[in-house]
Amino acid sequence: MMRKTDYAFWTFLLMTGLAGATTLLNVTQTYSATSSQNSELYRQLDLFGDVLERVRSDYVEKPDDTQLIESAINGMLSSLDPHSSYMSPKNFRDMQIQTRGEFGGLGIEVTMENGVIKVVSPIDETPAAKAGLLANDLITHLDNEQISGLTLEQAVEKMRGPVNTTITLTIVRKGKDEPFDVKVTRDVIRINAVKARAEGDVAYIKVSTFNEQTHANVVKSIETLNKQIGSPLKGYIIDLRNNPGGLLDQAIAVSDDFLEQGAIVLTKGRNNEETQRANARPGDITSGKKIAVLINGGSASASEIVAGALQDHKRATVIGTRSFGKGSVQTIIPLGANGAIRLTTARYYTPSNRSIQAKGIDPDIMIEEDLPEDIKAKIGNEKPRGEAALRGHLKNPDGTIKEEKEESSGSSSYVPKEPEKDTQLQYALSFLRGTAKEPPAASSTPASTPEQPGQAPADDAEKKPTPN
Image (cartoon, rainbow, N blue to C red; front, side, top):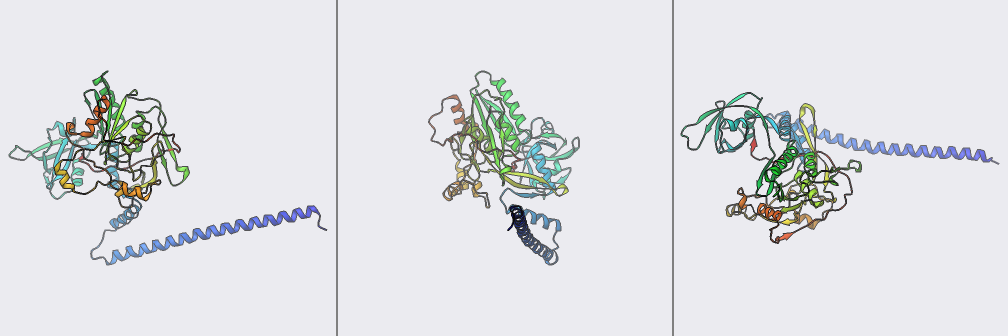
């Protein structure tokens, strides 16, 4: 008869053997699955190599190898969603200039018109302004070389350059019979993303983008207007209309300027451990005074983070029309000398855990701008395009098919140049002064306790008149 000690010993060995066999089987299965996946990937890479070689050898004209590879990489990234892309070394440098908000240049905003460069406006206190350049001046030559045939980007690149170097611009100006030359010495140009003015007893702050200068300029503008307006100050208008976004840390800092506590933004990646949260610190630079935030169909990304944070905390009343709906985070990943990739790495959520992806921020008070007849005729029946109208956009994780159809309409991004014709601005002024009439429509979103944490880099800048 087997003794109890022997029985326990052989039972232990049997269990150990079974455990080892199970572990070995699991490892083998895992390795087999991984190996199978890798084999399929390598087969697809072989296919890519075959196509590349066939294009290089048989295409009707000799292709540029670098361009072929860059296009292939960009095709892979752009197939993921509308905001992931490859940036060549030059495009990466341009992006860094835009987000840094300063560069060596002349200090003029320009656009292309009929093959020549048109000055939109000189920037105050810059070499261009000091040299006497005016809005609507036409630049036909750079250092005696014709601009004709260059793209806007190529012309801007020629005008930018090392500080203290000189360039000669040939100018055609209305009222002058002959073109004339102007010599301009390049200097450090800082793109002011913030413009502010007193609207009587209301402080108006226009934020056009979120670059590295934005938060500091918002603080400076509010301090200046507080002193200028003094005790009659009724409140603040933060105008985020047609602001395409920019740096997430700047959106967080600007939101924090008006909040005492609580979450500002939550970001959620593919895995739970990638979820992060940004919180406000004590200190409201407006001392709790009323705030109106203006948004429209051109307000996207970082500007939606600010609007959503202030709305959820009931710190501001959001006025205008539904925002663009870009609720994803792009991380810029440098590739050394080979440029960088912009990759969508997370979705962001407002403090009450709302995803605005492909949906946008709905204003508390809906106010639409009246479109001039010429613009109405130009757009006809064409509906404004939001994020949901972009091919391959990320779906809202909480959305339904019915909601997706409704979201694709977007909203108008038209803003009149004259403040007195700006319906949204005028309503915001009367709202802060307590004289506003009953709004035609309202859609209020209650704040709630944040559930998950958020923070990460953001992206984006749409093309506007190019500063240089």
